[in-house]
Image: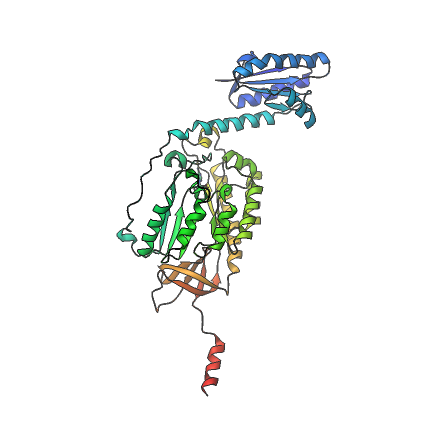
Length: 459
Ligand code: SAH
């Protein structure tokens, strides 16, 4: 049982404020105790109208010193007129009374509530003890011979690492897939060489946080190094990787992508939400501003890059205002593709344990629809710029009578040509029609000038 204690000095206003704080604490599941020494959270609401009132506060804090020393988990908050609304005063107090965790001005409750919530979050995340997780690693060093139904496939997915250590509050993956562990570089290279010999032209390198590849071995240039190795495989045409976490997109990695011809101009970097409050509760470890700057840096470093992201709508506590942050972010950044998901509590995750799934299903649906509409406009606008351009497409096969493939920056393109088999080939095609999700193209037409010139020469 979690217990709280409050003491107040001074006027009725302080009494009322103390009551409000108590109400907030009870909402968080705390019950009252009249003994400060036994409490998990102690709130002292102060008065400075007389020196004697002030002295009483210092006396109480002095008495709590040994208690806090014995129980460092105890949270002490000092609020009211001693603190006031000046940061300077709070800073001075912080210096003299380091045992106090939270200072709040008169009538404030938020700083303490936020502090306790954040602590709960950290605790719940800590409780998930990574050391108990599976770290089994089965070497995948046998040659991977594509099973019959996959023979002749142009694309292959290649896991380069397993598990995840990040414990985002919504995410069940670490609980189920164990700790982060990278496959040895040589093993991956061997596998990709073998796949290329079997006809694979493009590989998608997979990891939960793929830009951390190698970090578990202390190799912080793991992914750039791997990309270089794969870039030198002759039969292979293209390399992509998925999914990156914003915090590990080093400049070295971006420059490597820009430099290597076989590594596509295509980055998958999920933001998940466009409001700092939501990101904090998700424990993503970056702010919206950080993400905006990252996208700028990606675009400045890799010409013609396509950026994809993931979004969860309706995460616990996401208000209309928080959601609007996501709308604004996507409208400003105009990313190439957005994978949308409606928040769903997963058993065992931190969010499922300590946060209420409080956005109603219809509201999640509405938000999903809003972003879907927005992204369809953005996609249409981006793709329209390709009209009339000639692009390189790696053809994956036939779909409803047309050749289907993707550009370097992952745009889906269809074109007609009954005369030959394009599977696995790179085609240069001219875009004739664009929509939000795909484009139509044709093989380059012989240029008119040539046709006109020939008869003149032959005269
Ligand atoms: N490693 C990736 C996430 C992999 S899960 C990352 O760092 O972002 C793929 C996507 O599923 C996530 O990006 C997220 O958008 C979505 N997702 C994960 N857990 C979810 C949940 N509980 N409810 C709804 N969507 C979720």
